[in-house]
Length: 178
Image (tube, rainbow, N blue to C red; front, side):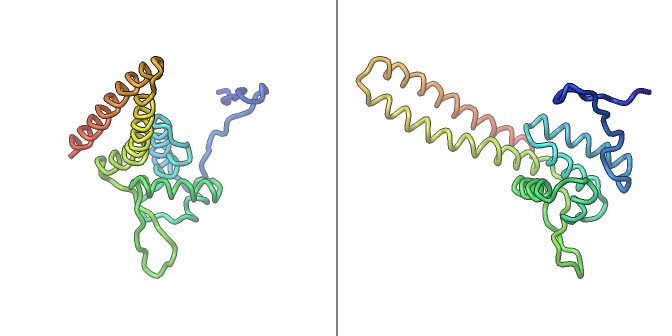
């Protein structure tokens, strides 16, 4: 069997590593990590976030920062950023391990909590910020005497209505996950 080749960036063939993860990670854990990577990339999140979540989700014991760096072979910066982001989403939570002062993490097992965290962190926060900006723009355009500005004010009003409908749809989706 020929090794996979990557020529996207350099134009020169580069062999893809057959085993990206250290040998301490089982084949089943690798599959969970790969699934998490694909899922997070579909949602527009960095690959490292998927790796970290998949690793913690597939672990039978709480995982430390040092475990993440060593077992996934990622940088301290990527691990730190990914863990903080996953905590903000509510996808992982810190847990206590007796006689160890380090932070340890376990994965959230509730789909509702995961979806709620993602929507809140990525969608609702953005929608709330953009709503204020649209209201300000609409008020400014409506106050103008220019016909072109008045036409744009009508378009902004339409966007505000769509925005409101989008927020309501997201809230309904969240309540359906009970």
